Image (tube, rainbow, N blue to C red; front, side, top):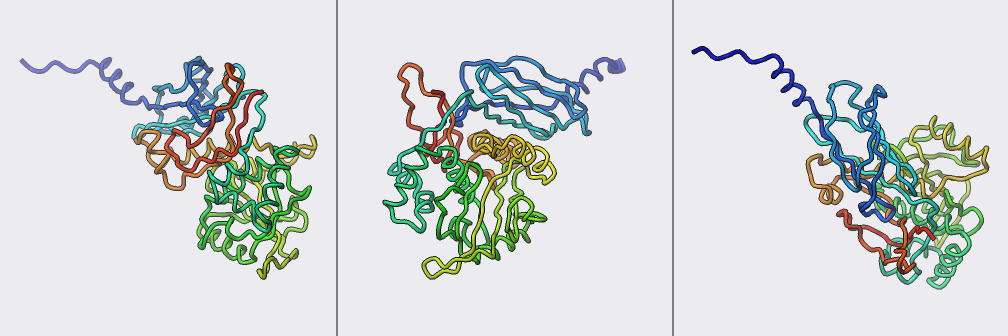
Length: 367
């Protein structure tokens, strides 16, 4: 008996099944731990703004099977929201039949505030950061400056610690940007979006060499947003929240026998200059506001996770986070809530997501 021809209906069904891509969405809180025991609204739109998912799902992890089109429709937008949390999202998330699309999102609790490590705890947990804060000062002076910021300018201290941790992860041809700083200006210029300091003038050549290797991109007209600046470069590793180093090469100072220039590090929300101008600089100018340390932390964390996810698409999450090439995010800032039963915060140390560089110097809690 000759074989029976395959049904067209069966063939269509098989093709539809084969063209289903997998996306895994995992939700984390401000302590970088997976959220447990709560439901969140997850919305997924394709590249043509068609809604694929609009459902509440239990945290932390949900697996979605989504249609694969092999065109621009596969560049998805993922949005999530929940009661008592700030909305978060990421775009584009590219679907593929060859790899799972991993999406890690951080949602901060509403009305969180800062809580920092003591100076002694910071020295013990991350001496590289404490040594940076101590440049140009004695240990006693550094402790006093640190404690003053803790009490009077917590957002500025959060920014300083986040910038220090981010610069610690940037590898120049020789050393990191932190290694070139010889003095920090502990005055009103130290704000929640930037700080100023004096660094060995050779840092300029090091950064330019790194730019030639594709690690940084020069910023045109640096004096437009940074008065008296002579040059400026921005890290281009992530889609958002990259470090920008601005040089004021006419402002020179000799520190401990080393010829130094003034350097202004900051982190912008957006990599693109147009988006930075329209969506960050102009709104901040109108509202007389500054870049938010909390937003920077979340943006860089999510962008860093996405960069890691793209490196080893089939690896289990903890290993992927630990071994992904170039995976570096801000580790100085932790945002979370104290247990309501005690009103006291637990001691946060290394994250359980496989990264061994966690610095628990800041906790953001809901009071």
